[in-house]
Length: 265
Image 1 (spheres, rainbow, N blue to C red):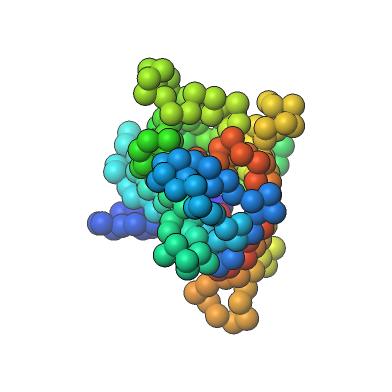
Image 2: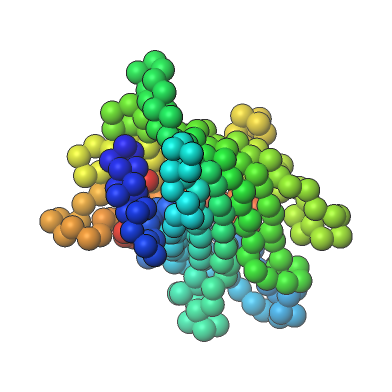
């Protein structure tokens, strides 16, 4: 993580710089053993015969960019955009549509305090605001806004983050998903470990808070593709709620395999 932050520091002084934010990857095949519901799509498009396949492609593109650097010798300001898409590429009979796309612009203040505790170094603390939506209307519309913090510590090749958030309330008539925090909770914990050229990650969200009823776990592994330096193989497993905004209250048990351009470390 320290190496990643140093790279960001080197790049942040260059004009018009885009840097990786969250992992950038393509899951060529992602299979949900519980299946995806077509009910909302049937209602939106008035087509009771519409079907959604349980196997699809998924990809995430995530970039960040500096807005201000080293303000008062203590803080940087960043903006970022993350796009995560769920593509029914194997549904050739319905022109392989995008089942869901989640847009996530955000901005934050970042401090790098370097505090030491129990062998860990507090490498970064962030305080920001994020909007997430699927950009759709009618019964398919989903969105929410949050204020968040993110506290990141590392020890050797191991990094740990704790990210709590507070949902910004909306008027009842404008709220497409009033119970979203029942499923996505108010925080997530992420652990990442790098071993040689392999990166292992684990995320837990809303498990303790919901009594292990409405939470989620995500596991990831990126690994070398022989000696090819520009891409890695990638496997991701997700079980629980909140895989996407449209499925936030639907249980998903999904494994996918593909390639990664960047990872957490």
